Length: 401
Ligand code: FNR
Image (cartoon, rainbow, N blue to C red; front, side):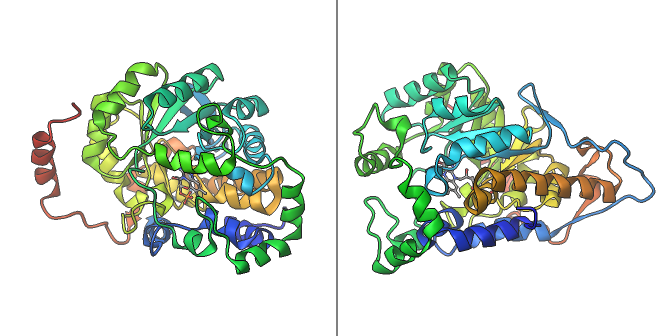
Protein backbone atom coordinates (compact mmCIF):
# COMPACT_ATOMS: atom_id res chain seq x y z
CA UNK A 1 0.00 0.00 0.00
CA UNK A 2 2.98 2.32 0.57
CA UNK A 3 3.11 3.40 -3.04
CA UNK A 4 -0.51 4.55 -3.03
CA UNK A 5 0.07 8.26 -2.46
CA UNK A 6 -3.44 9.66 -2.61
CA UNK A 7 -7.04 8.61 -2.18
CA UNK A 8 -7.29 8.75 -5.98
CA UNK A 9 -4.53 6.10 -6.23
CA UNK A 10 -6.53 3.81 -3.95
CA UNK A 11 -9.64 4.38 -6.04
CA UNK A 12 -7.74 3.28 -9.19
CA UNK A 13 -6.51 0.15 -7.42
CA UNK A 14 -9.98 -0.72 -6.19
CA UNK A 15 -11.29 -0.26 -9.72
CA UNK A 16 -8.70 -2.71 -11.05
CA UNK A 17 -9.37 -5.31 -8.37
CA UNK A 18 -13.15 -5.26 -7.99
CA UNK A 19 -15.74 -6.44 -10.49
CA UNK A 20 -17.49 -3.57 -12.24
CA UNK A 21 -20.77 -4.33 -10.42
CA UNK A 22 -19.12 -3.91 -7.02
CA UNK A 23 -16.97 -0.92 -7.94
CA UNK A 24 -19.99 0.87 -9.43
CA UNK A 25 -22.07 0.10 -6.35
CA UNK A 26 -19.61 1.96 -4.13
CA UNK A 27 -18.51 4.61 -6.63
CA UNK A 28 -21.83 5.43 -8.28
CA UNK A 29 -24.53 7.94 -7.40
CA UNK A 30 -28.05 8.94 -8.39
CA UNK A 31 -29.21 10.01 -11.83
CA UNK A 32 -26.55 12.07 -13.64
CA UNK A 33 -24.26 12.01 -10.58
CA UNK A 34 -24.12 15.81 -10.58
CA UNK A 35 -24.32 16.14 -6.80
CA UNK A 36 -21.67 13.45 -6.24
CA UNK A 37 -19.33 15.26 -8.63
CA UNK A 38 -20.11 18.65 -7.14
CA UNK A 39 -19.43 17.36 -3.60
CA UNK A 40 -15.80 16.87 -4.66
CA UNK A 41 -15.50 19.82 -7.02
CA UNK A 42 -16.79 22.38 -4.51
CA UNK A 43 -13.63 21.94 -2.41
CA UNK A 44 -11.55 23.28 -5.32
CA UNK A 45 -13.59 26.49 -5.14
CA UNK A 46 -12.48 27.14 -1.56
CA UNK A 47 -9.02 28.60 -1.12
CA UNK A 48 -6.92 28.30 2.04
CA UNK A 49 -5.17 31.52 3.17
CA UNK A 50 -1.91 30.52 4.88
CA UNK A 51 -0.08 32.53 7.53
CA UNK A 52 3.72 32.83 7.25
CA UNK A 53 6.41 32.77 9.93
CA UNK A 54 4.14 31.02 12.40
CA UNK A 55 5.89 27.77 13.44
CA UNK A 56 3.72 24.80 14.39
CA UNK A 57 6.04 22.81 16.68
CA UNK A 58 3.42 20.54 18.21
CA UNK A 59 0.74 20.51 15.60
CA UNK A 60 -2.40 18.87 17.03
CA UNK A 61 -4.96 17.15 14.80
CA UNK A 62 -7.02 15.84 17.73
CA UNK A 63 -10.69 16.63 18.34
CA UNK A 64 -13.31 15.77 20.95
CA UNK A 65 -16.82 14.60 20.20
CA UNK A 66 -19.34 13.16 22.68
CA UNK A 67 -16.55 13.05 25.30
CA UNK A 68 -14.27 10.90 23.13
CA UNK A 69 -10.91 12.34 22.20
CA UNK A 70 -10.06 11.36 18.59
CA UNK A 71 -6.61 11.50 17.01
CA UNK A 72 -8.02 13.17 13.91
CA UNK A 73 -11.30 14.84 12.92
CA UNK A 74 -12.16 12.20 10.31
CA UNK A 75 -14.79 9.56 11.07
CA UNK A 76 -16.05 6.58 9.09
CA UNK A 77 -19.51 7.28 7.68
CA UNK A 78 -22.01 4.39 7.43
CA UNK A 79 -22.16 2.28 4.28
CA UNK A 80 -24.29 -0.81 3.80
CA UNK A 81 -23.31 -4.21 2.37
CA UNK A 82 -19.57 -3.60 2.79
CA UNK A 83 -18.89 -7.35 2.82
CA UNK A 84 -19.25 -7.34 -0.96
CA UNK A 85 -16.02 -5.31 -1.18
CA UNK A 86 -13.89 -7.47 1.16
CA UNK A 87 -14.79 -10.51 3.26
CA UNK A 88 -15.83 -9.41 6.74
CA UNK A 89 -15.25 -5.88 5.46
CA UNK A 90 -16.82 -4.05 8.41
CA UNK A 91 -14.50 -5.79 10.89
CA UNK A 92 -11.48 -4.72 8.81
CA UNK A 93 -12.77 -1.14 8.71
CA UNK A 94 -13.46 -1.17 12.47
CA UNK A 95 -9.89 -2.31 13.24
CA UNK A 96 -8.32 0.30 10.95
CA UNK A 97 -10.55 3.10 12.31
CA UNK A 98 -9.79 2.12 15.89
CA UNK A 99 -6.02 2.03 15.26
CA UNK A 100 -6.24 5.47 13.61
CA UNK A 101 -8.04 6.92 16.65
CA UNK A 102 -11.24 7.49 14.70
CA UNK A 103 -14.91 6.56 15.19
CA UNK A 104 -16.75 4.10 12.97
CA UNK A 105 -20.42 4.68 12.26
CA UNK A 106 -21.88 1.25 11.52
CA UNK A 107 -24.77 0.96 9.07
CA UNK A 108 -27.80 -1.14 10.04
CA UNK A 109 -27.41 -2.66 6.57
CA UNK A 110 -23.96 -4.01 7.47
CA UNK A 111 -22.97 -7.48 6.28
CA UNK A 112 -21.74 -8.51 9.77
CA UNK A 113 -24.00 -8.15 12.78
CA UNK A 114 -23.70 -4.98 14.84
CA UNK A 115 -22.72 -7.13 17.85
CA UNK A 116 -19.87 -8.76 15.94
CA UNK A 117 -18.59 -5.42 14.62
CA UNK A 118 -18.74 -3.96 18.14
CA UNK A 119 -16.51 -6.82 19.36
CA UNK A 120 -14.01 -6.56 16.50
CA UNK A 121 -12.11 -3.48 17.74
CA UNK A 122 -11.85 -1.41 20.91
CA UNK A 123 -12.49 2.00 19.28
CA UNK A 124 -15.69 4.04 19.82
CA UNK A 125 -18.59 3.28 17.49
CA UNK A 126 -21.93 4.83 16.59
CA UNK A 127 -24.87 2.99 15.05
CA UNK A 128 -26.81 4.28 12.03
CA UNK A 129 -30.38 3.29 11.23
CA UNK A 130 -33.58 4.64 9.73
CA UNK A 131 -37.03 5.07 11.23
CA UNK A 132 -38.59 2.04 9.58
CA UNK A 133 -42.22 1.32 8.75
CA UNK A 134 -42.06 -1.25 11.52
CA UNK A 135 -41.52 0.89 14.62
CA UNK A 136 -40.92 -2.27 16.68
CA UNK A 137 -37.87 -3.13 14.53
CA UNK A 138 -36.75 0.50 14.80
CA UNK A 139 -36.75 0.43 18.60
CA UNK A 140 -35.34 -3.06 18.81
CA UNK A 141 -32.31 -2.16 16.67
CA UNK A 142 -31.65 0.91 18.82
CA UNK A 143 -31.91 -1.16 22.01
CA UNK A 144 -29.50 -3.76 20.58
CA UNK A 145 -27.07 -0.98 19.62
CA UNK A 146 -27.15 0.39 23.15
CA UNK A 147 -26.61 -3.08 24.62
CA UNK A 148 -23.69 -3.70 22.24
CA UNK A 149 -21.98 -0.50 23.43
CA UNK A 150 -22.64 1.90 20.56
CA UNK A 151 -22.25 5.40 21.92
CA UNK A 152 -24.42 7.45 19.58
CA UNK A 153 -27.42 6.72 17.39
CA UNK A 154 -27.33 8.24 13.90
CA UNK A 155 -30.74 8.49 12.27
CA UNK A 156 -30.66 8.94 8.51
CA UNK A 157 -33.57 11.01 7.23
CA UNK A 158 -32.81 11.48 3.53
CA UNK A 159 -34.23 8.21 2.18
CA UNK A 160 -38.03 8.62 1.83
CA UNK A 161 -37.59 6.57 -1.38
CA UNK A 162 -34.61 4.68 -2.83
CA UNK A 163 -32.30 6.68 -5.13
CA UNK A 164 -32.17 5.83 -8.84
CA UNK A 165 -28.62 4.76 -9.57
CA UNK A 166 -28.14 4.08 -13.25
CA UNK A 167 -24.86 2.21 -12.90
CA UNK A 168 -26.53 -0.34 -10.60
CA UNK A 169 -29.56 -0.64 -12.88
CA UNK A 170 -27.36 -1.19 -15.96
CA UNK A 171 -25.20 -3.76 -14.15
CA UNK A 172 -28.24 -5.54 -12.73
CA UNK A 173 -27.17 -4.80 -9.12
CA UNK A 174 -30.78 -4.62 -8.02
CA UNK A 175 -33.19 -6.29 -5.60
CA UNK A 176 -33.72 -8.98 -6.80
CA UNK A 177 -30.40 -9.10 -8.75
CA UNK A 178 -30.58 -9.22 -12.54
CA UNK A 179 -26.89 -9.46 -13.49
CA UNK A 180 -26.18 -8.91 -17.17
CA UNK A 181 -24.03 -11.40 -19.13
CA UNK A 182 -21.33 -8.77 -19.45
CA UNK A 183 -21.25 -7.99 -15.71
CA UNK A 184 -21.26 -11.72 -14.94
CA UNK A 185 -18.27 -12.29 -17.24
CA UNK A 186 -16.47 -9.30 -15.77
CA UNK A 187 -16.97 -10.79 -12.30
CA UNK A 188 -15.40 -14.09 -13.43
CA UNK A 189 -12.25 -12.24 -14.49
CA UNK A 190 -11.55 -10.69 -11.06
CA UNK A 191 -9.87 -13.80 -9.65
CA UNK A 192 -8.58 -12.29 -6.41
CA UNK A 193 -11.99 -10.97 -5.43
CA UNK A 194 -13.75 -14.12 -6.65
CA UNK A 195 -11.50 -16.40 -4.60
CA UNK A 196 -12.09 -14.33 -1.45
CA UNK A 197 -15.84 -14.27 -1.93
CA UNK A 198 -16.00 -18.00 -2.55
CA UNK A 199 -14.19 -18.67 0.72
CA UNK A 200 -16.58 -16.70 2.95
CA UNK A 201 -20.14 -17.59 3.97
CA UNK A 202 -22.83 -16.00 1.79
CA UNK A 203 -23.18 -12.34 2.73
CA UNK A 204 -26.46 -11.02 4.01
CA UNK A 205 -27.99 -8.41 6.33
CA UNK A 206 -27.59 -10.17 9.69
CA UNK A 207 -28.98 -7.27 11.75
CA UNK A 208 -32.39 -7.97 10.25
CA UNK A 209 -32.33 -11.74 10.20
CA UNK A 210 -34.41 -12.19 13.32
CA UNK A 211 -37.23 -10.01 11.98
CA UNK A 212 -37.61 -10.83 8.28
CA UNK A 213 -36.85 -14.03 6.47
CA UNK A 214 -33.28 -15.21 6.40
CA UNK A 215 -32.33 -15.51 2.69
CA UNK A 216 -30.40 -12.61 1.17
CA UNK A 217 -33.00 -12.05 -1.55
CA UNK A 218 -35.97 -12.16 0.80
CA UNK A 219 -34.30 -9.79 3.23
CA UNK A 220 -33.30 -7.40 0.44
CA UNK A 221 -36.92 -7.11 -0.67
CA UNK A 222 -38.19 -6.99 2.89
CA UNK A 223 -35.69 -4.21 3.69
CA UNK A 224 -36.85 -2.12 0.72
CA UNK A 225 -40.38 -2.55 2.03
CA UNK A 226 -39.25 -1.18 5.40
CA UNK A 227 -38.54 2.28 3.95
CA UNK A 228 -41.20 4.58 5.35
CA UNK A 229 -42.06 7.56 3.12
CA UNK A 230 -44.35 8.98 5.82
CA UNK A 231 -41.65 9.62 8.46
CA UNK A 232 -41.90 13.16 9.86
CA UNK A 233 -40.45 15.31 12.62
CA UNK A 234 -42.73 13.92 15.31
CA UNK A 235 -41.33 10.42 14.58
CA UNK A 236 -37.87 11.70 15.32
CA UNK A 237 -39.24 13.22 18.52
CA UNK A 238 -40.63 9.76 19.39
CA UNK A 239 -37.26 8.09 18.79
CA UNK A 240 -35.54 10.81 20.83
CA UNK A 241 -37.67 9.74 23.80
CA UNK A 242 -36.43 6.16 23.47
CA UNK A 243 -32.70 6.84 23.05
CA UNK A 244 -30.95 8.42 25.99
CA UNK A 245 -27.45 8.67 24.47
CA UNK A 246 -26.26 11.17 21.87
CA UNK A 247 -28.62 11.37 18.88
CA UNK A 248 -27.31 12.52 15.49
CA UNK A 249 -29.56 13.44 12.55
CA UNK A 250 -27.94 12.53 9.21
CA UNK A 251 -29.00 14.05 5.91
CA UNK A 252 -29.58 17.73 6.72
CA UNK A 253 -29.11 20.14 3.80
CA UNK A 254 -31.40 23.03 4.73
CA UNK A 255 -30.79 25.52 7.57
CA UNK A 256 -34.49 25.40 8.52
CA UNK A 257 -34.25 21.64 9.05
CA UNK A 258 -31.18 22.12 11.22
CA UNK A 259 -33.24 24.44 13.47
CA UNK A 260 -36.12 21.94 13.64
CA UNK A 261 -33.71 19.13 14.50
CA UNK A 262 -32.42 21.13 17.44
CA UNK A 263 -36.00 21.73 18.63
CA UNK A 264 -36.43 17.94 18.62
CA UNK A 265 -33.36 17.62 20.83
CA UNK A 266 -30.65 16.09 18.62
CA UNK A 267 -27.08 16.23 19.92
CA UNK A 268 -25.41 16.79 16.55
CA UNK A 269 -26.49 17.81 13.06
CA UNK A 270 -24.89 15.90 10.22
CA UNK A 271 -24.83 17.74 6.91
CA UNK A 272 -25.06 15.10 4.21
CA UNK A 273 -26.63 14.49 0.81
CA UNK A 274 -25.93 10.74 1.02
CA UNK A 275 -22.89 11.20 -1.22
CA UNK A 276 -25.20 12.23 -4.08
CA UNK A 277 -26.94 8.85 -4.02
CA UNK A 278 -30.43 10.21 -3.39
CA UNK A 279 -31.70 13.48 -4.91
CA UNK A 280 -29.41 14.49 -7.75
CA UNK A 281 -28.62 18.21 -8.26
CA UNK A 282 -28.71 18.94 -4.54
CA UNK A 283 -25.83 21.31 -3.73
CA UNK A 284 -22.52 20.05 -2.42
CA UNK A 285 -22.52 19.59 1.33
CA UNK A 286 -19.64 22.03 1.80
CA UNK A 287 -21.67 24.67 -0.05
CA UNK A 288 -24.53 24.51 2.47
CA UNK A 289 -22.30 23.94 5.50
CA UNK A 290 -21.77 27.64 6.41
CA UNK A 291 -25.52 28.38 6.45
CA UNK A 292 -26.20 25.35 8.60
CA UNK A 293 -23.42 26.28 11.02
CA UNK A 294 -25.02 29.72 11.25
CA UNK A 295 -28.49 28.25 11.89
CA UNK A 296 -27.19 25.86 14.55
CA UNK A 297 -25.36 28.73 16.23
CA UNK A 298 -23.06 26.58 18.41
CA UNK A 299 -25.94 24.83 20.18
CA UNK A 300 -24.72 21.37 19.05
CA UNK A 301 -21.77 20.20 16.92
CA UNK A 302 -22.21 20.24 13.15
CA UNK A 303 -20.54 17.37 11.31
CA UNK A 304 -20.39 16.80 7.56
CA UNK A 305 -19.74 14.17 4.89
CA UNK A 306 -19.61 14.19 1.10
CA UNK A 307 -16.70 14.51 -1.31
CA UNK A 308 -13.88 14.68 1.25
CA UNK A 309 -10.82 13.28 -0.52
CA UNK A 310 -7.87 15.23 0.89
CA UNK A 311 -6.54 16.49 4.20
CA UNK A 312 -7.04 20.05 2.97
CA UNK A 313 -10.75 19.26 2.38
CA UNK A 314 -10.99 18.29 6.05
CA UNK A 315 -9.39 21.59 7.03
CA UNK A 316 -11.85 23.55 4.87
CA UNK A 317 -14.82 21.87 6.57
CA UNK A 318 -13.39 22.78 9.98
CA UNK A 319 -12.70 26.35 8.87
CA UNK A 320 -16.36 26.61 7.86
CA UNK A 321 -17.43 25.56 11.33
CA UNK A 322 -17.75 21.75 11.29
CA UNK A 323 -16.53 19.95 14.42
CA UNK A 324 -15.35 17.02 12.31
CA UNK A 325 -16.11 15.28 9.05
CA UNK A 326 -16.71 11.78 7.75
CA UNK A 327 -15.56 9.79 4.73
CA UNK A 328 -17.48 7.15 2.79
CA UNK A 329 -16.13 6.13 -0.61
CA UNK A 330 -12.47 6.76 0.33
CA UNK A 331 -12.47 3.96 2.92
CA UNK A 332 -14.44 1.67 0.62
CA UNK A 333 -11.84 2.23 -2.11
CA UNK A 334 -9.09 1.52 0.43
CA UNK A 335 -10.91 -1.64 1.49
CA UNK A 336 -11.37 -2.73 -2.12
CA UNK A 337 -7.71 -2.05 -2.86
CA UNK A 338 -6.23 -3.97 0.07
CA UNK A 339 -8.60 -4.78 2.94
CA UNK A 340 -7.63 -3.49 6.38
CA UNK A 341 -4.22 -2.32 5.11
CA UNK A 342 -5.98 -0.27 2.45
CA UNK A 343 -8.24 1.44 5.00
CA UNK A 344 -5.25 2.10 7.26
CA UNK A 345 -3.54 3.69 4.27
CA UNK A 346 -6.56 5.99 3.78
CA UNK A 347 -6.24 7.26 7.35
CA UNK A 348 -2.46 7.64 7.01
CA UNK A 349 -2.81 9.67 3.82
CA UNK A 350 -5.51 11.96 5.22
CA UNK A 351 -3.66 12.49 8.50
CA UNK A 352 -0.40 13.27 6.73
CA UNK A 353 -2.14 15.68 4.34
CA UNK A 354 -3.99 17.36 7.19
CA UNK A 355 -0.78 17.82 9.20
CA UNK A 356 1.01 19.24 6.15
CA UNK A 357 -1.83 21.68 5.43
CA UNK A 358 -1.75 22.83 9.06
CA UNK A 359 2.03 23.31 8.94
CA UNK A 360 1.91 25.18 5.63
CA UNK A 361 -0.81 27.48 6.93
CA UNK A 362 0.83 28.18 10.28
CA UNK A 363 -1.98 26.62 12.32
CA UNK A 364 -0.75 24.75 15.37
CA UNK A 365 -4.01 22.93 15.94
CA UNK A 366 -7.22 22.36 14.05
CA UNK A 367 -9.00 24.72 16.47
CA UNK A 368 -6.97 27.64 15.16
CA UNK A 369 -8.47 27.45 11.66
CA UNK A 370 -11.41 29.79 11.10
CA UNK A 371 -13.52 31.51 8.45
CA UNK A 372 -10.82 34.20 8.27
CA UNK A 373 -8.44 31.60 6.82
CA UNK A 374 -10.41 30.70 3.72
CA UNK A 375 -11.68 32.50 0.66
CA UNK A 376 -14.61 31.24 -1.39
CA UNK A 377 -13.70 31.53 -5.08
CA UNK A 378 -17.35 31.39 -6.01
CA UNK A 379 -19.85 31.89 -3.22
CA UNK A 380 -22.77 29.46 -3.38
CA UNK A 381 -25.62 31.79 -4.33
CA UNK A 382 -28.61 31.36 -2.03
CA UNK A 383 -31.92 32.63 -3.42
CA UNK A 384 -32.43 36.36 -2.88
CA UNK A 385 -34.39 37.03 0.32
CA UNK A 386 -33.83 33.40 1.39
CA UNK A 387 -33.62 34.05 5.10
CA UNK A 388 -36.75 36.20 5.52
CA UNK A 389 -38.80 33.78 3.36
CA UNK A 390 -37.49 30.73 5.18
CA UNK A 391 -38.36 32.13 8.59
CA UNK A 392 -41.98 32.83 7.67
CA UNK A 393 -42.37 29.39 6.01
CA UNK A 394 -40.90 27.66 9.05
CA UNK A 395 -43.50 29.39 11.24
CA UNK A 396 -46.33 28.37 8.91
CA UNK A 397 -45.23 24.74 9.08
CA UNK A 398 -45.50 24.81 12.84
CA UNK A 399 -41.97 23.86 13.87
CA UNK A 400 -41.12 20.39 15.04
CA UNK A 401 -44.53 19.30 16.32
C1 FNR B 1 -23.76 4.92 1.58
N1 FNR B 1 -24.39 5.82 2.44
C2 FNR B 1 -25.22 5.34 3.45
N2 FNR B 1 -25.76 6.20 4.35
C3 FNR B 1 -26.53 5.75 5.36
O1 FNR B 1 -27.00 6.57 6.17
N3 FNR B 1 -26.77 4.41 5.49
C4 FNR B 1 -26.26 3.47 4.64
O2 FNR B 1 -26.48 2.27 4.80
C5 FNR B 1 -25.48 3.95 3.54
N4 FNR B 1 -24.97 3.09 2.62
C6 FNR B 1 -24.08 3.54 1.67
C7 FNR B 1 -23.45 2.63 0.82
C8 FNR B 1 -22.48 3.07 -0.07
C9 FNR B 1 -21.80 2.07 -0.96
C10 FNR B 1 -22.13 4.45 -0.13
C11 FNR B 1 -21.06 4.95 -1.06
C12 FNR B 1 -22.77 5.35 0.69
C13 FNR B 1 -24.07 7.26 2.38
C14 FNR B 1 -22.84 7.56 3.24
O3 FNR B 1 -23.12 7.39 4.61
C15 FNR B 1 -22.30 8.98 3.05
O4 FNR B 1 -23.33 9.92 3.27
C16 FNR B 1 -21.61 9.26 1.72
O5 FNR B 1 -20.94 8.12 1.25
C17 FNR B 1 -20.61 10.40 1.90
O6 FNR B 1 -20.02 10.76 0.72
P1 FNR B 1 -18.57 10.26 0.23
O7 FNR B 1 -17.60 10.40 1.37
O8 FNR B 1 -18.77 8.84 -0.19
O9 FNR B 1 -18.28 11.17 -0.92
